[in-house]
Amino acid sequence: MTRTTVGILRGGTGSEYNLSLRTGSAMMSALPEDTYEVRDILIDKSGMWHHRGQPSTPARALAQTDVVLNAIHGGIGEDGTVQRILERAGVAYGGSRPLQSVLSLNKIRARAILQKAGLRMPRAVTFSVHNGLDTGEMATAVFSRFSPPYVVKPPSEGASRGVIVADTIAHLPDAIGDVIDAYGSALIEEFIMGEEASVGVIEQFRNEEHYVLPPAHVHKECRHIHNAHHEEGVLMHTVPSNFSYAQKLSLADMAKLAHTSLGLSHYSRSDLIVTGHGIYLLEVNSVPGLYPSASFPIMLDSVGSSLREFLEHVIRLARS
Image (cartoon, rainbow, N blue to C red; front, side):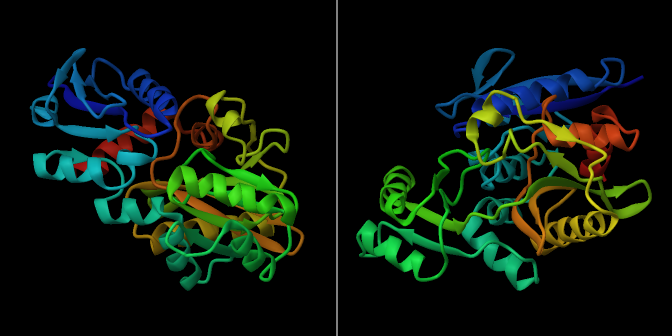
């Protein structure tokens, strides 16, 4: 039987390099050798492509590859760069297209689309180095809109990279300054207290146009907001969750609406906060983590599926 050649693209120049290596490794382990010839295609931190352990051009690394699965979180893996390279090479690939990828990665642009679609999100203010305000003036402007605590984050990073929590207005100017100095701009959101949830969406799965996985409840001691919890793989999830039936329906509806509003392809994962007065959408991930401690594999397991079944489904979608 002729095997399908699948390129697993991992690494990248962004801050989630190590998480990408772990997702890529999980992908490679999940695909059986008797059906797939799996190629490990690494992009190192400098942007150099590697194939079979040797530096390579993208065209050479992708040659004679039937389909590519993208395991690069953030950066070039989600800002449309990799997707445009794959399209120029004429290679089928799983996941979202270039424009939709960059829209979901950019939290400021995504917020505008998601809020227009009617999704509730934390109140927020954005500043950049070009605003002409000092950080004290920025903090005052935020305080006039909503009260502390505040979440200060870079607009285009994942896995809570660069996120700072300012508990009081006094701490806010330094937090804004640190993020703007490092990333050029800052998104300041109100800190929403509640129970964290992740919800996966898969297209054309089990005879449903948009199949929504059961929500994963993120344990309070392992919050998404802490980057170390991602890097160290200590995020803990419970599926089935203890959310009420009504809450689960709302979480599913919001994740589906977020996916379709951003025009994402094949799959996504939404992160949300459940509170006593409603549910808030935090962000949407077009390349969710698939490493063992990530929420997506656990959600798959909860419905009797597996990472293998999911990846084989994505390969079929990519080639259709």
